[in-house]
Amino acid sequence: MRKRYLIANWKMNLPPEGVDNYLAAMARADARDVTIVVAPPFPFLRDVSPHRIAVGAQNCSDHQNGAFTGEVSPGMLRGCGVDYVILGHSERRQIFHEADPLIARKLALAIETGLTPVLCIGEDIRVRDTGQVARFLADQIRATAIPALEMAKDVVIAYEPVWAIGTGRNASGAMVAETVGEIRQSLERFWPARYAAGLPILYGGSVTPDNVDDLVVSGGIDGFLVGGASLDSSKFSAILAGLARAA
Ligand code: PGA
Image (cartoon, rainbow, N blue to C red; front, top):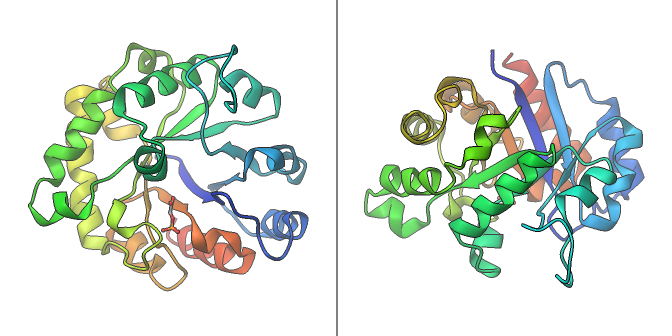
């Protein structure tokens, strides 16, 4: 059975209820077999692990040290107790112009450093509307088919259609299921064979307590990467309950 995850991507935000209140509430939630990961902004990374919640970073450098003002290396993240790192998020790709070769280098260094990468892939609305989704995602997967994948203990994929992120317009369970099938086919073609069936694929994009059931029941996914709704512990707990119920 594949591992299941619920990942909070706070982006450059903090929970209105306060970091410690939020983390204490999530530590009390009944997670069953679901691994909860909280990815706060960098200065708050060390606040997460005392609550026995897995720690995620939202980004890392493709270098371990040096003259790279404003960057944080995978080794430094490990030193702060970080286990997971989100890579290739569409906001990094679009706003900060991160392209596949840079993401592939970050992926390699994260794996070599012992972090579990959460690799985000997803199409924009033009690609979806012109029926190019399978080919587009195959290209993103092929671009990250690096030798370091052979030595990775775990890798997580987050399928996040760009048009669904922060828009209130989530993909339907049926649409996600079809796309997850296409992603597995591309993994089989381009990544080491062991990844095709065993790798957890999460969905992200406007996940809320209201749409979680459809995505869990019909989506064929192994969890969620949640932005906006992850900032409120009661909403995030409700999403967790929906996911945990479907064990
Ligand atoms: P959203 O963000 O849940 O606010 O759509 C998801 C993400 O960006 O990971």
